[in-house]
Amino acid sequence: MTTQQLVAEIKRKKSFLCIGLDVDLSKIPTHLLEEEDPIFAFNKEIIDATHHLCVAYKPNTAFYEAYGLKGWKALEKTINYINENHPEIFTIADAKRGDIGNTSTMYAKAFFEDLSFDSVTVAPYMGKDSVEPFLAFENKHTILLALTSNQGAFDFQTQKINDQEVYKKVLEVSKTWNNASNLMYVVGATKAEYLGEIRQIIPDNFLLVPGVGAQGGNLQDVCKYGMTEDIGLLINSSRGIIYAGSGKDFAVESSYKAKELQKQMEQILNLS
Image 1: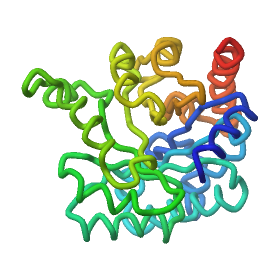
Image 2: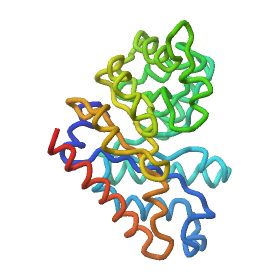
Image 3: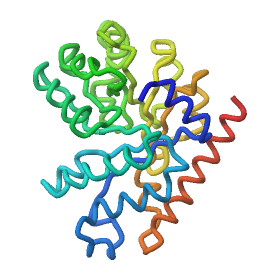
């Protein structure tokens, strides 16, 4: 999917909501545990109930890898279901990969070719040659971890080297890499006050913003400092939506929570 197609879908749905499909079997409704594939059964109902309210889905691969082969098969079935039934949806493999070049190439093939995700999250710590293999894929997007929403982000990301924060160095250097136009960046909603300076460095790239909802991030603040003429934001909510209900009507409850965020986004888009 191209960036232009993503922007068009945001404008059509009046939403820049991304829903994180982070499935924990201890949290899903108990009646689904009787299914042959409870992870996929859960995801399918969430997707069926919310696809018209969001523009992206983001499975965190750890929640699938934890269940071994069955979990990976459920991830494969989930991405295939989205691609076959809702090809307009932008898909994100939240895998946080990053390794030496030939290994990164294989990670990229796994997510872009075998599973046909539109994008994958990548850690920048190993530098240029660990990220460019992902960037080499046409119409695929690499979402680089820049300033994350967790407390530990202050351990390294905001520390200064020669009077410049590490995350700013990551942003500036990444702009010089081959096919850098395919880059998006992760910036946590709990770091909204940093968005103004981030936009001075990367004024046009899309930002994937986790942390709205359960982690306490504020949607209005994120949009105030991070939105661009082409929106430039994907706001992710995971637990706050997918675990909104615990009964047989859990997907309906999830759609209500997704609708609440979508309506807020529609109001912001109408004012921008």
